[in-house]
Amino acid sequence: MSNLGRPDYQQIASNYGITVHKVEVGDETWNESGSVHLNRSFCGGIDEIVIGVYEDIDWEIASFFHELGHCITTNTFEGDYLKFHIELDAWMVGLQEAYKYGYVIQPSTLKFMIECLESYIGWEEREVRGYKNEKWRLH
Image (cartoon, helix red, strand yellow):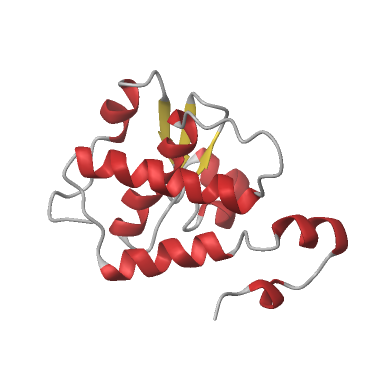
């Protein structure tokens, strides 16, 4: 995302009362769940973020800020919002936070973010009816 290197995730998250766990290959979390943490991160409620193992440091940083976006958003998403809208909001809120800390996305990272976001297009229909993901890809 920039030439600043990996940020101190816990220091940033602590500003919001959030705990961060970083998964490493070979640690207990990796050994228990393995590839579910490859190029993926998660948030647990609004006070915990789990950062997975990434092929690209910029993807990891972007994902941290995305999960932070989930935790700190002020949007409530009541009504007819789709999972896509919730994920888009998390990216937008997270990117605003990233900029506050001097992180600016690179074109390759934007492509990664779009691919992540695309996976939620039609999410509700796939979960209920089992549609194939390819049907919902942006072209």
